[in-house]
Length: 272
Image (cartoon, rainbow, N blue to C red; front, side, top):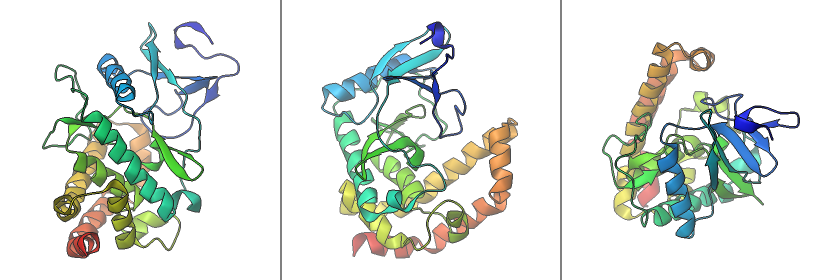
């Protein structure tokens, strides 16, 4: 290991995600990565989660003098696109819901630091008292023996409703995107309404939350679109390329229409 987060021979670059692409390294039992601006508050939260019985997240180890953080490495398998069929089984999906429920139950006992500068990029616009992960995509879930065991990359965590986290997870894991968009990353033959029900059952959503979930997914999709728009307006090359390769804004318009037209069908699947 080199001092102050510099790279060294034997460092293993970790793939996945766009925000910190090429700058996350494994060094034995540690992960060295850029620290978010609210790292101290986030580290305190992660430590408090462990005190409340949740071991499905990295343990913070410390901060370096050059703006990087060190976390415990979480062993297991992380799905990367295009996603393999093993990561999209019904059992894997149910386990994502269960893991997210355990995160929220443990987090309910942790007081959120309201003085911290939590990022608003993908945050619930309605706010809340639970610190949501906000980016429960396959690349941020670690599996062991075919079941979701841990969440990584809490950089976008912010206060919100637990249902917001479920909606974000549904976008990525069901997936709640139109078939043309899904075909680029997901195995064929995924039955969307049934998978939405599996995720809700795995989490243990209440009837009221089930009724609200399709609308919250649409709300989350709009927040994600605005997130991409800001990155594109800032000239971020990764987001510019991804937008061009994935169908441009027409894809986002298509997703919006597809979700709105199927709201009743999704509600029926969740409540029947």
